[in-house]
Image (cartoon, rainbow, N blue to C red; front, side, top):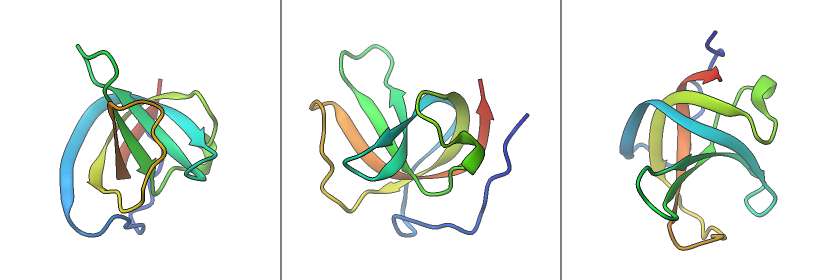
Length: 101
């Protein structure tokens, strides 16, 4: 059953870089960013990941390691992220749909 998503939060400005639907990711907490992330592994790559710094994660899903299916809007990340490896791209992520797998 989909979680209720707050539509009030807007981070990363108004410019949407890309919109995703029915994407699988894993929730992680970053002590560097001091935020929850959704990590999406890009298929057929060695180390490419889209990292969404989540703007509106429901409190019921604030736990490291939860796998989700989601839809949302990726927006420009305006901070200097600490990357674990070179294939990571950071965005702000405004969730529009989320289902725990």
